[in-house]
Image (tube, rainbow, N blue to C red; front, side, top):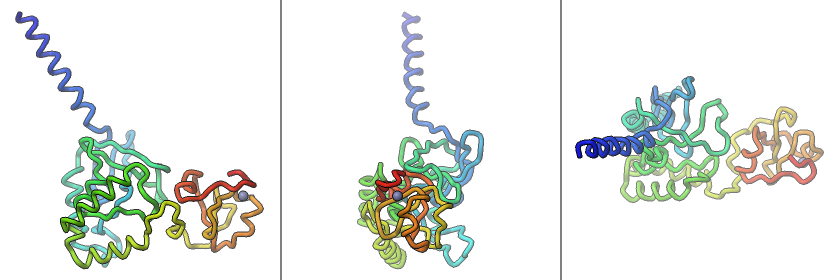
Length: 240
Ligand SMILES: [Zn+2]
């Protein structure tokens, strides 16, 4: 009888431990830079992670005029939720951004923290570089909730106005090419793939059609997927 009891206790501990181990993420957050940027120990290296589809108000911007009290609120919130915690990262499209930072959704205790920031009204659903492919509906629903309840950004008339104006510029269409980040003339040969601001095709840099795109209208893509994410389709001639 006592033996059976012991077995039951052991089994209970075992099955209680399994979910606990599954929930804890694998990467430790070693520092919170601001509301939407953290540092994690990523496979033994300290790496900056920029959270996807969010953009919290600034708190540590080099241009001090950009820093607003709401930025501090967002930063404190992220610190409180993530600092020292073990999180999981989920990537979408390319893993790194222009500055070499990891771009990811951050999961803490199985919660999508990017969506949580939007739900708290600490960030708009940031679609400047495209919609979320995996969590578009979650982000939209979270933003509706935050707006309806006037949370943080949405409770501050000036900030709310600013973000509504920005959001109208970002646009909501998946194939939008009006939000291309590079505006300097582009040398086609320095690109892995080349697109035009005026069409939806992308090419290899040596394609004859690239010569017809004026340098000011060229767009560089580092990855095929990056072009496709922005609504571009492969050229039928050079087959990139
Ligand atoms: Zn081509």
